[in-house]
Image (cartoon, rainbow, N blue to C red; front, side, top):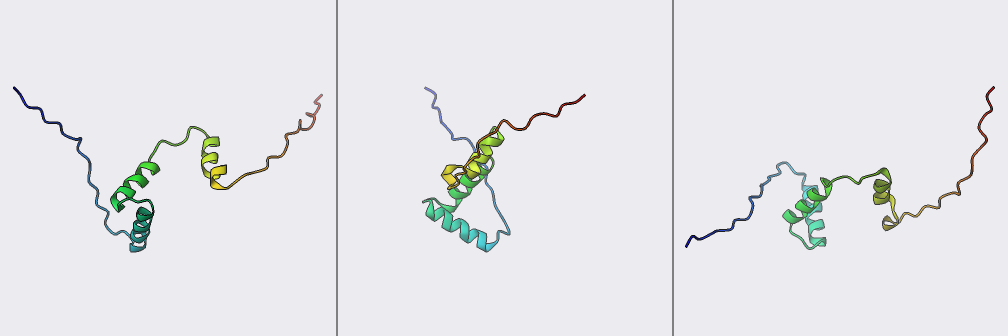
Length: 88
């Protein structure tokens, strides 16, 4: 009877040289704050940074300035505008 071995897909490795020590320290703090290893935090950052962009400008604005980010704007009422010019 043949034996089957299941292998996990190969994952790429990445080495980052010349990283500013201040950035590394901030990464370490961020990873600890999120309860992750530095490696896992970098994966999260890259995954989020390279995700598909939102579909519309409104979605981008909402993601940057929405109520979840503490920004609430009072929008003025829309008016009918002015009369178009009469030509002729």
